[in-house]
Length: 601
Image (cartoon, rainbow, N blue to C red; front, side):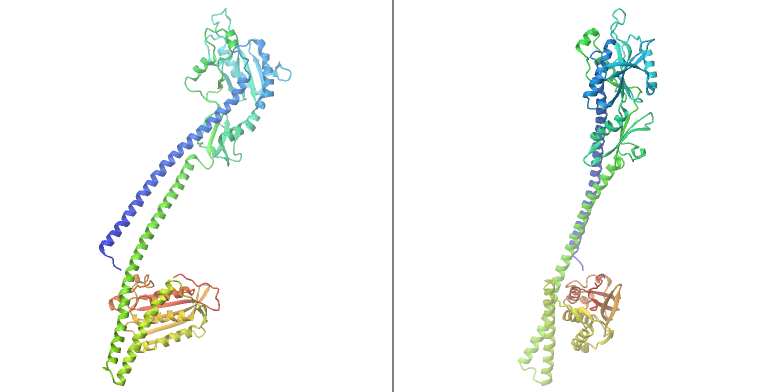
């Protein structure tokens, strides 16, 4: 079918424009998904770092509560006040929410010559001398070295007033200071004489405190979104807590974020802490004791330079980058899926428009062809009738010949009208088929008998081959006869000069299905391969029929296909130009009505 060049060019331009739009949309979708993924990653990273900072802050806050609970109110209390630490320990054990966080409290009097360690007895509210626990060996060496370094040093050091955390025990150490000696040159500086030691309960930290903080900072309605791990030691080999115990350590490396729970302070933080913790230079110790501590938030420094306890967090399903990549893939899949649906919809619209255009053109050609087909027999009938009415023909043989002519053209006219009415009935789905076992041999004989005059006039040789043991077919007898008649009529029209018609019927096995096959074959013009996809469309007529001006409406094959498929069968064709065509009807075997015939092909 040829289209006008202008319309064809317009259609090609429209398709090209739509393709360009789809490509541009695809590029924009790809770029947009990248920007969204990057923004999502940044948001998740910030959220993760915020949660990690909150975990660190909450953990430090619990230790700061201990520091605040064991303050005596003066930066440099006298030795007589040290026994009050036992009372503070008793108050902590009685009132604190995490009272099991503190395992023991010690007062270390490090005076030269009579250094001693005293344990706070919360039950008897007293200090009792004890031997150094074995786990404090390294801590004792460290703080003895610090005492030697800071003993009698006149300049002020922040370590005089800050708490120290030795994560190896673990324990908190706070300097014990005596009021300054007014008779010495360094009268405004207190003296370092020992340490308050608060031993932490590692079992409680591992089993209760860290799990609670992890759930609070990284948990969600469906459980943990991230893998959370807290480690200790220089190489982070000691696992203090892990949100998923069965997981191997390899699942946490590289982490999406990692933070020291007690790491180095920012630049200048020690100076600020010193200024906030120390009383003013012109204030006496008594004044400082009356006014209370000038700093509300204790400063805790790790014994090691960078701290040993580290928090590692990793996205649960791989890394954060993997999660972002998966999100982008889902976004791209959804976006390109929508574009693909849009492209398919556009293609279907274009195909539908082409089909509608072709159908409209075929309908126009059908109208013109039918008008011509109807006009020809009507003209012959009217002419013959006028000759008979005017007495032009009076002899007996001529009258008989004219009568035969009128009858033949009348039948031709009735056949075309019936075909058009049948097509309308099929298209409106008003046709009703009575499926029952049908003797195919009887239907073939009836059709050939009805076409005998046409076969005789055309000098057609009919070669009939029917299997003697042919089973009954499941079909509508009248509709099957109509279909066969259309195929025979089609073979007569396009049989060319071969003057041969073949009709075969047999039972064949198509896979697991046994079916009845009826073939009508000719050795005429044949059908070009490009036209095989269209010959069953209504109103379609091949190029050979148009060139040779063969009469027809273009409805016969379409009607045959629709009726056969309505009976649960199918129709196929094998053809080659110049070698003829073979149309085959495939019907279900009536002896096996429940088998479904293969409708492909």
